[in-house]
Length: 354
Image (tube, rainbow, N blue to C red; front, side, top):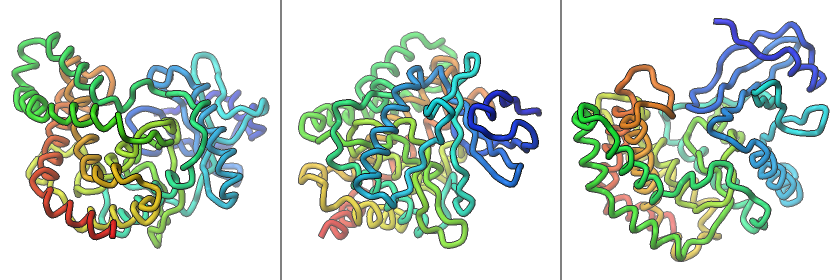
């Protein structure tokens, strides 16, 4: 299949128009991402999903604010922002599409699942480092790039609405997932109460393992990528999404739920890496809710997959009709593993906090 990248895009970045080999790269659900190789250079080219990110200028402003702050606080920190076009902007609009070009980091690779606890440690440390370095940045000029992105109360209401409108046959197929969604609804109330006491921080909001580059040989952390949801939020978002994507040997698309188990050695590595960067700046209240972060994100993601299934699969890309239902049950299974092993996991947390 031919990949159509507008020829005018290259000109706006003073790059050769011809001579590129274009290949899809990455496993993200939202944007279309490619690697362009040729002319003795390589670039990451990305088409922004304007249906999801309706205000590209908000993404641009947030990245600019973070980049300026980080350059002053730690000039050597690798912050992988898009390169600027001839107008000095990160984003280029051509017809009705929005495009960005990023530097290609040759020594970095991404994973969808992890095969070594060292990978979990390095990735968690890298995301923790970004949060630590952005601690203290003024929040007043930041914008929400996806409004209420991690608002669990909203996601539950969206689930309830989808449930009322779903056809009877669809609800029947999703009966188990629906029951699990209702059984864990107390997590919504817990989150609403925590919002009254937890501080807002600039968070990445999408810290799945595929959004950090690790060195292809040593697995040491290289840099965080995919900065579109860099905006104010709670630390629960970043830590929770790490738990969601680091702790199981299989990703959210695995349909065999017997394979969805929590690996405690990866939990240890994750917490050790994250807390090596964040322990000194977390508040006392934040330290008491570290495990809740995993429950929070897993429940929210399960609700989102389930709601999309009930609505006819209109948001997430799917390769077969039941995939969002499978994803939802997958996430509920991992949530159940955290609940089941809660005492052991809390003990591990206490060890790394002391």
